[in-house]
Image (cartoon, helix red, strand yellow):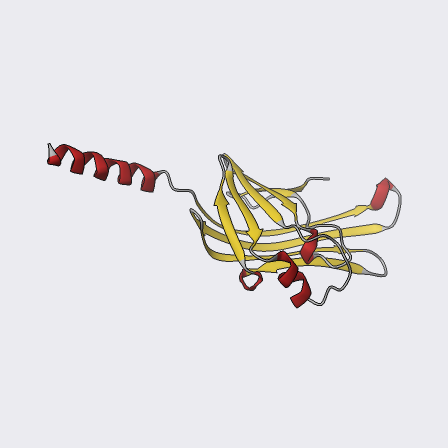
Length: 159
């Protein structure tokens, strides 16, 4: 009888390890467009490195910029910001352990909110990056939302 329990436990562990969610990708995206179709030139640029194994974050770095003719804004997040990962049915939800401390460390002294959540959702070869993280963006409202084909590297900004 003990052998049955041992085998059942081993099978349970193997199945859970096999189904663990893993992400290891680089993102490099740029888009130039006219704001509102006829306005000033707008350049969106994102570079990221995401490496996750279940809830363990091995590497996480993302720089997201918006450039206009005479000014630009950026958002950035990395391992030094105190990140934690949660598994979801579609991928991951990345949060800051202490969003207020991360914002203060960057020298942002005005209120933009103290929430930060970045959803990384996989659908086949598509990685949907859905940020809601104004905490680390200074005067910019948020990181860029985008979808990346992890096989080809092609990007589509969700606007």
